[in-house]
Length: 288
Image (cartoon, rainbow, N blue to C red):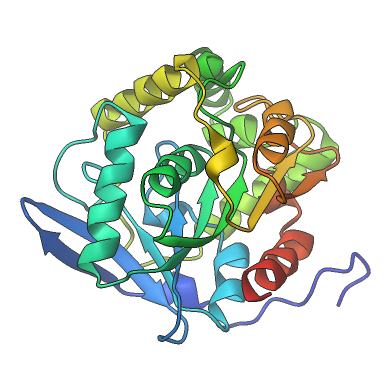
């Protein structure tokens, strides 16, 4: 380790080299990647707003994939997947269920971030027997206060990033201070480690549809999360501007027995800023 406590990074980067596969079910072809040892219960990753297969931090994926079968996928209408983005989170959860069952799995662990966590909640509420464990990061419950403001926050930060010729995630995911700026740059660099066979970026129309679905989720009546008895790990930064950090505490309160980690001096991308601490915690939670 170096003097910051960060483990040395291996020259091998499994996720950066994982081939993109295709699964056709009905009228939709899903793009997905898998890595890690097959067998047992897989960990299926649910990604964030506007994200594709290339938006997962390899410093989160790779440690989990050392001992678990990991699957990432593009929702319909996103990246290399065909079809159209649904107008509701519920429909996105139905699509995720179709994909998972088409792969032949009857039980999964879920790792989710942001929009992915909203989809994961709806999936687990509708199909509780499918999910064994839940990891909910940078997300909040249906009807959570402030979620419906995501449209304004997102467009404002996209504008700020455009003016500075930066990636919007630097503004949306990280604090604009010395620590946050450094973490943002490092995160964006890690997302570029895959240099060949990269995914197709999300279209503007698909992105806008996702945004409206999140807004509707925030304005909906709350779901009864007391019915979730699954072991659940919740994590966020202490200054999340996209999905307010207090909603992580709200999730923790609503899901009995859940664990909560809040990282200091960090925003929506707290788990990426603190990957050296969070990845081992996630590995331990999923293995316990």
